[in-house]
Image (cartoon, rainbow over all chains, first blue to last red; front, side):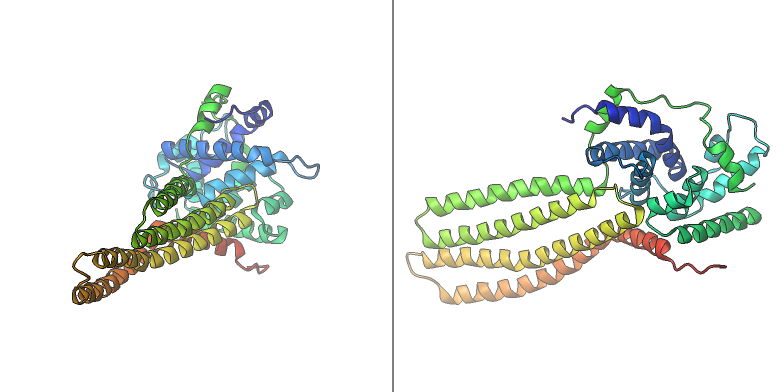
Length: 168
Length: 211
């Protein structure tokens, strides 16, 4: 039987749950898969929490992004419900609904989501961190590559997306 | 529309925002078993480790309880096999434990999992290669022991024929085991290893400014 999560873990999870949900949203199109991934990430966060040591130069969010992305990308689970090519249009429409009115047509947003879904898992990590507004130094810290590398790869990912959108 | 435009609406709360987990829900969630293959391997290895401890205890019991030398010898050989398996499962568990810590950066995590999986495959393959001949030797030993204890004396011609047959069948079985093990390992871990190595290659792609 697992012990009850500590109050500080609960508080951290309460604050960062939307972050974890956004990671799952980007990596899983299927609702069941998304829920599975969410549970797996929370489970791994809880297990890693006792080893987490707050440091003045390291943010809690960086630690959370690392675990969430590591679990999502290296996700060593049987992928029976995850076909290589999936029709994401419906999901993309759902994801594309903003709270506030957007200057863009919903079709444009859906097309961009579809293009993102076609990227590799590693490229999606760059997209996620970019959408999350993480600075390059933090992205480098999360991904384990140099800032220069992050900058160049981010540029490449954006190029890939542009090409896909033009083709679409 | 570009990523910069999407970024503005990405972090806005969803229309039907999911409520935060309550402590009870979270307690239930963390009590569940992980669906990760590594966790499944860990659970299986723990179970098999327990079984091997029982096997070693059982063989010790036989060795103490019997007065027949050949039975003692057989129990000893079986116990030895159990000890090798215990060593293997302890190492496997240690390796799996080191692979399941996801707190490092992505690249280090991928390297650790890839290398860990390769080591696991190597372990498993070597153990399987040794288990076949060792089991055959045990069976032969058991048969030889019975023959030596026959009241009318051992039938050496029959022993020779059985030993020859065991050698031929053992060799054929070993070839089949090797082929099956390779196929099984490829099926079980191959797709994951390929994917992880592909992701590492992607992260390690050389950066050329201007490209």
